[in-house]
Length: 114
Image (cartoon, rainbow, N blue to C red; front, side, top):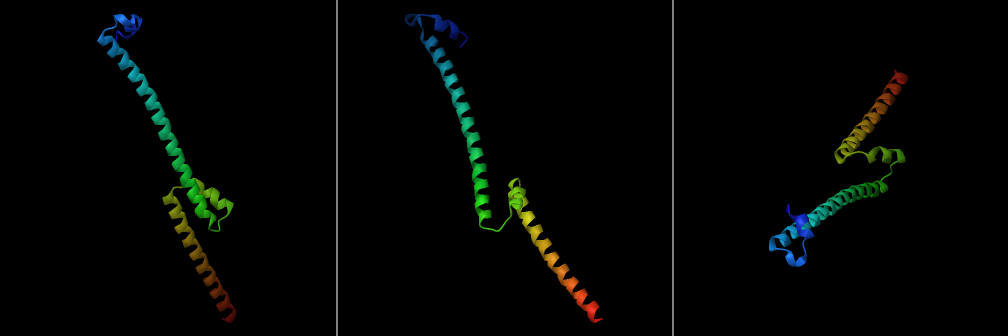
């Protein structure tokens, strides 16, 4: 392919089979480069669309549950695992809050009667 430039300078009637092969090889490389670039662009677009779909699915599922705008903003940057952990922690905090309120009521009523 070193002779590609010289092959292009020749008249068509003077081209050898090897000249034609060299020209075709270079053209094929150019086409492959363009194809690789387009394929990379498509892969990037696929990744972006997958992320967008994930966000839309989350938003759709959150639409059905009573969550505040603040909750939505907090969850936007989280992974599925992080969301699961946050949900579990919220459940534990809610349960502990209920237990503390019950103990508080119990202490209040025993201090009044005792």
